Length: 323
Image 1 (tube, one colour):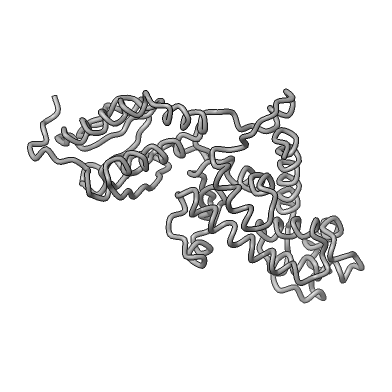
Image 2: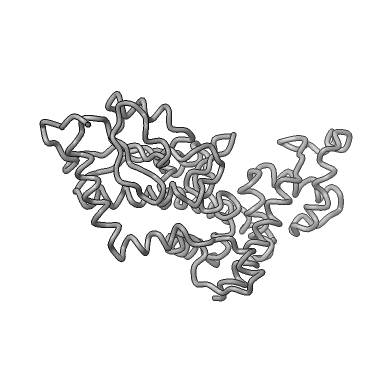
């Protein structure tokens, strides 16, 4: 039996330090990280606490942090409940919230809160947001129409409006980047819904890339900067979006190189389809020697596919979620 926390401490008034350990997959299964992120925020709000939340690809380091007192709660898969030195909550959709053994009042507080919220309409709404199917192509194949594209539609609409974009286009970018999983990380360090690099986040004064709103804020701030860059040219509005997408993926300097190289090949540097024709030649070092390109050789197949994929997602979102 767990030892009793003789001080009877609760979380109230403190900053609750939390970690979500959700496995090694690039995309968190069933958006579970996002679901628990929202639950942890609601728990802290109910208890008048501040909350600090981080994610982990594996649980070992954060269990150690829990045991040494630098983290208060670690969300673990329900199957990982036999770790020495921890006490776990009642199950929460296949997960448990773990605290250090001996924090009896903490685990009681968590269980009472989970028991209360799990029987509420608010909880049902949260489950609907995160455990619904967000595969647009499956819905398209079945002829399904929907009003919801992601768990973050309200945020996407807010920031798309600030950009002057159709919100479904921004949703398409986020779907391509992360499949709406806040826990997505690339090998290069890009993080969260819009795969924002830490240096980019710092530039836009965003500190917490796990936070869905902060991540979208940073990503869309960068998109807006790219929009301004291409607006000063003779590129049409429709083409601008493709250039912005390409620059978001490869960097604006690289895309300016592509435009310069396309013009040298007597191609229209204001049309993305013409840039696509030029890109394969940008791996030809003989041609590049005389081009004077700032970033040199470019294998741009990934960027071509990125733009194609986002545009495909957008068309599919428009089909299943008519304006």
